[in-house]
Image 1 (tube, rainbow, N blue to C red):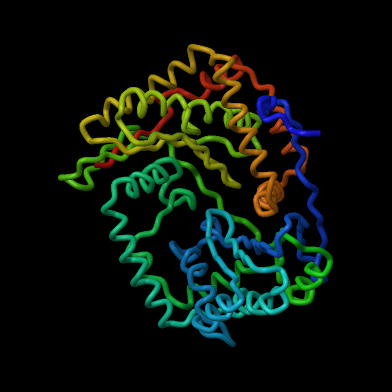
Image 2: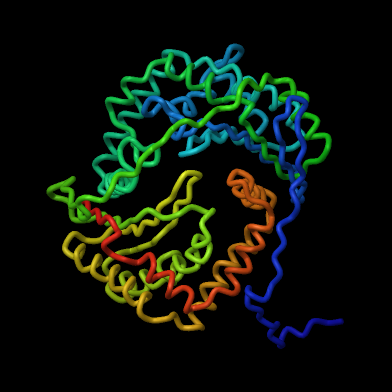
Length: 427
């Protein structure tokens, strides 16, 4: 059959598609460490994530989680930092270490065929990091320099302040790095944090790409005999402070021409029934380029190059924040329009065509995420770390498809109360 290129192919809304998350395989190594793996993709590549409860939530001393992650591959019992980096580069691999609020993630990107050579190096990095004194000195010097530079930027200070106000300075999600805290770090701090938190009793391994039983066996060969120790008992109890002063204006640069605006409130995490429908409301409000905030404050008023709102769900809480930078002369006007758009959503149900566009945007993005092994792995990783199954994914898809304009209006009335939001302006 010859394709008639004069005939326009049919266009289907993303809401009409079926969405199925490819199944994830689960096995346990000989020592009980769970491995979740997915065989997908057509390229000879693999991503492996080692997840540890070694984030800011587990810190006993400020800045130690990020310092430990930052120096993990800067020297082991067998290899120097240079040797580790040279080995990775020789095989065209990348090894990234990132400390977040709840977890530290160690990620290896590699050609699948090089795993037998690279996995022993990764094991050495995870298990035998030595945190050399001179490497720590360089780390502290560079980190302090970056911090001092960042503190000159109004958007950096605004991000720090909104987290501090929402969670409190003593809360892991509100805590931020300070010069004194970085300089006070010792090698003993990092060694102790590493010993206590890079613990395979609480570790999970995720793998995706062109992999199968052979690659799973490699993981078992190199990590299945690792001692697991005792599980970490989470004894931290952190109280979120009651709201006192709601509006905060900070002068960071007397000559600055730009102001950073952050307007935020605490918000439930993924376990709350309002979370998923609020994702739709957030997208409509400020979650993508065609949002209400962008159409009004960027396109119509011209106050900013970009304005967004975002949800930050963590294991032990979450937040909802609007963020933008504007000229200092229009800061108050931009804030007024933000609250105006909140008010409109509270008092007027969204147009069905606009809501369909938002749903297609969300579900279209989901289609893209289901197209590659690494993005599928990310979807599964989020589910597993939050204690969810595939049913949660399917339920979210159904909510995206079926949520009504009236339900979103009710949600706006519940959460878009300006008196519940902190307002931070840094100039």
